[in-house]
Length: 322
Ligand code: KDG
Image 1 (tube, rainbow, N blue to C red):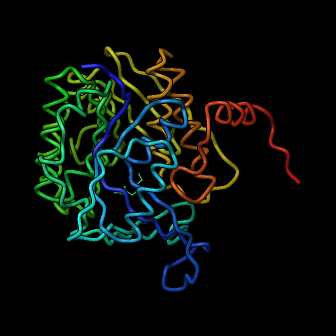
Image 2 (spheres, rainbow, N blue to C red; image 1 turned 30 degrees about the horizontal axis):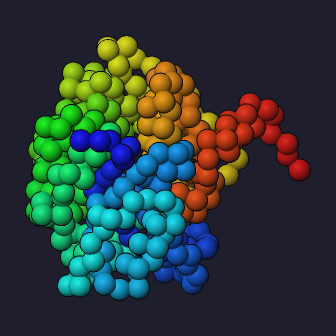
């Protein structure tokens, strides 16, 4: 089967309502509308780096569904696998910024019973998965419903059978899973992957009581490379038992941290798949994460590799304060 897609993924895209002002939502009066969802974010960022990407999802037969499709089409994502479900709405979520912890954001979902949560194995087309170089999965989609879990398992086993690379971000959303054991036992079925992204909180759920390095090393037995995103502590990777560490880029202001992890993944994938070393790919990944927190919205800060390089260069010089 010819590879005419680079990365495909399976996941929910939502309308994001992002407050113009920081603070508790009960006092927020004005919101900005964005389109976001972890899997779509990665595909959009990868498309900006020149890759061919496509998303499998469902939206409602509503204005928000039309907005999602238009936005993805506009960003150059293949939308041939997006189905419209007339029985359920497109999911939405709100973000609360800088409260109660300055610099942090909190998400509030209104997505239960959404069109995307109705995805099932019938929505996964074998031929479509086989056209990709890599399938990107996250721990979010299987947390949406039983039928989504079955769809994820089908996509995972098809990719394995057809030699399509599997990229996994554990992305455990406890607001969706509710139960740690349920999250742990399902995600442990997806661990055999080429590249596995995770973070400290997810490692603590997957391997309670174990330290980060031991958990990452354990995971790396099943993958080519494991990457642990550590936010303001940077990132580390384990490949062939070797450990790589990268300091973070510090930006002068944080607008909204949501989406930074997806931008990190996309920049890592974009550069690693071009043949850059783990060390170099981690530098681009950290930079993409840092740049993303400087604006509201998950994908608006990444535009091209050239702009990302300008950002990296700018941080090597002393900041001009005025
Ligand atoms: O990674 C950013 C996502 O968390 C955000 O866009 C919403 O997909 C989302 C989710 O399920 O939390």
